[in-house]
Length: 66
Image 1 (cartoon, rainbow, N blue to C red):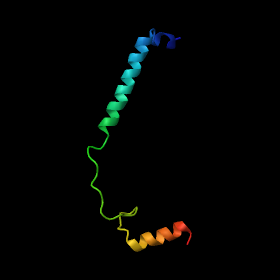
Image 2 (image 1 turned 120 degrees about the vertical axis):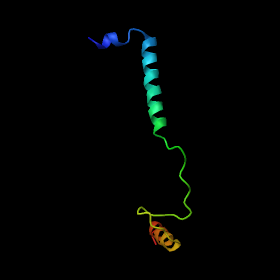
Image 3 (image 1 turned 90 degrees about the vertical axis):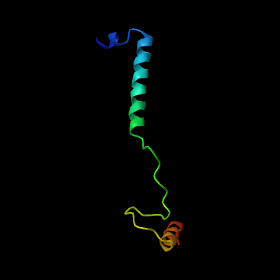
Image 4 (image 1 turned 135 degrees about the vertical axis):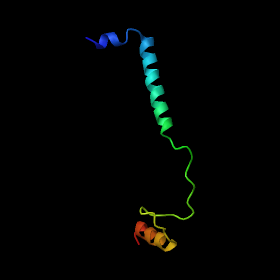
């Protein structure tokens, strides 16, 4: 009953959809980081502890099946 009266014209539907897209873009842009974080010089693990070259060799060996 009510759904037939929402968009009486194609243009009204297009304007409504454009408003929804505009709102989604505006919200997504507002939540985007303003700048990229500085690159890390040394890799870290999930606990943010430094990962050494020896640790990387062990991991590579495990992934290679050695």
